[in-house]
Length: 145
Picture 1: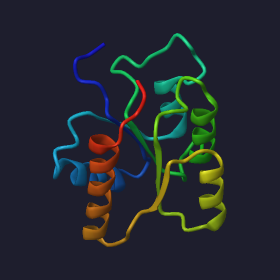
Picture 2: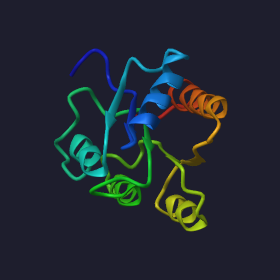
Picture 3: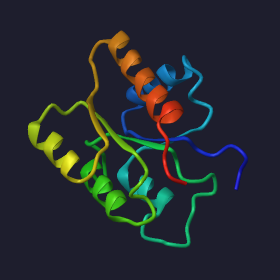
């Protein structure tokens, strides 16, 4: 395993949102260990929650930031698979999405999301939201190893 484990897995297909998220994390020195994947299939391929012998080369992340509207496999399906797997169920998953639909919110929590955040449209609000997410989930929150 590498000495620098991944701390955040960002599952996001929109390049602009990826850049904004990384920029917000970078502003608070939280980007040195972020892995970005553009869809749910790649997220599950990286984590492989059903393979009990698999650990990603750089370790399991401390946090997954998960968009819901993804190509190939939606965020809700990714969340379901992560939270029903013995290997990945304790990884905190924060849904970071533009969806304000009540059904997405309810289903995300039903499937085990640790938090649900609607992406603010305002740049400064988005930067602040990502900063708070990173500070809490990466620096303050304690997770089982």
